Amino acid sequence: MNKTKIKNMLEEKSKKDIRFKFNGNRNQIEEFDGKIVNTYKYLFVVKPNDNEIRRSFTYTDVLIGNLEIYFKD
Image 1 (cartoon, one colour):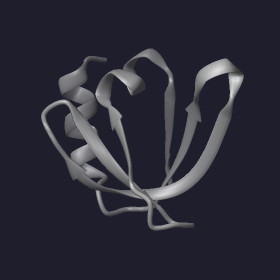
Image 2 (image 1 turned 180 degrees about the vertical axis):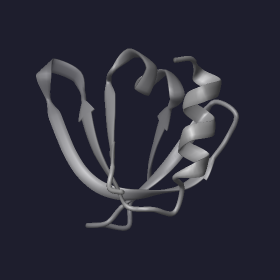
Image 3 (image 1 turned 120 degrees about the horizontal axis):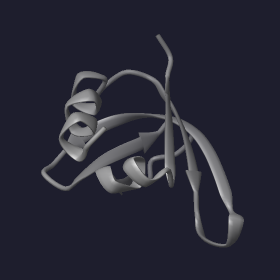
């Protein structure tokens, strides 16, 4: 999979509920539900369901496994 395929897949699933698992620094793992609100050339913006603070991630985060995405279909 490449960044273009990831971007296209996320654009298709935007505005739908998605489960995210972010593997941060020093083995910190954060899991949350949210929706993709915007996609841009190099990143996408997620609004978690439990708060108003939006988070941005790059398509590379998905590609290298720092961000795992589970679609709720």
